[in-house]
Image 1: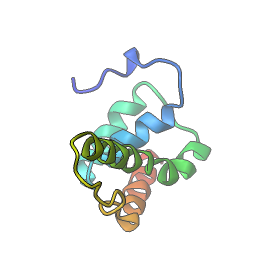
Image 2: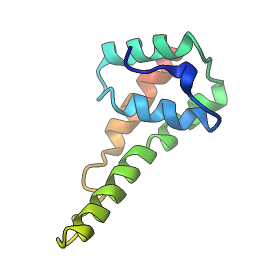
Image 3: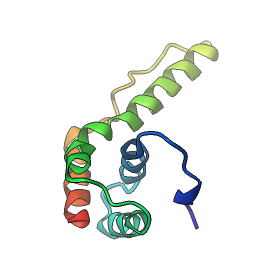
Length: 102
């Protein structure tokens, strides 16, 4: 088991789900597997599914901030933090996830 959703605490479940879906890299099989596993425990609302794409930007933001901080701590000039964000890719993953959930 890669993720135990029963151990999750209180908080915005959509943020965790978006993080998970971002990590599928748009692979249709992985999206289906992740959605099927998640739906055994949680059924997202239509409102949550509509907000999914926007919430998926949390992961690259977090990773960008982590990279920026690591560069500063290690005495290196910080790299461009948004260079790895592809809005078309995120939009495609969100659309495929919404389709898999419906």
